Image: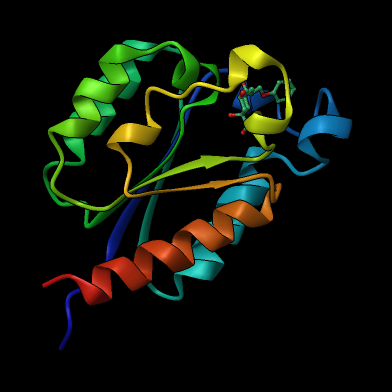
Length: 148
Ligand code: CA2
């Protein structure tokens, strides 16, 4: 029997406020709603879904993905635009990494145009709202299936 895919989905600062503030930018769904979408899209995959407001905790969780995760999905939120530490941690992984954003940072303020995560990611999904999380889980499953 094939091994159950394990996908870690990590979320950075302020994403705990989803569905509560700024719905015109980030939508009406809460992070708990989005977690359910990921579980459904995973179709039996193990989804480890987490959020933190702390950069170092994200680094710890990225390092933790070295043991047991088959793919990592990361919405780094604002830390994507600032964090060399996230870039360095991601570079230590040998599993597929998908950078994910609800909005399309390239279509927003100039300070959101650069990402320290993109150059350490396998691919980027941005601008599709909560649906982007489902797309990311599907992409992760494909990448896991295609691995050599
Ligand atoms: O579009 C995304 O997913 C972002 O990663 C969201 C970040 C932003 O800094 C990135 O440029 C793009 C901000 C997350 C803030 O989340 C909130 C949710 C509800 C209310 C207020 C903030």
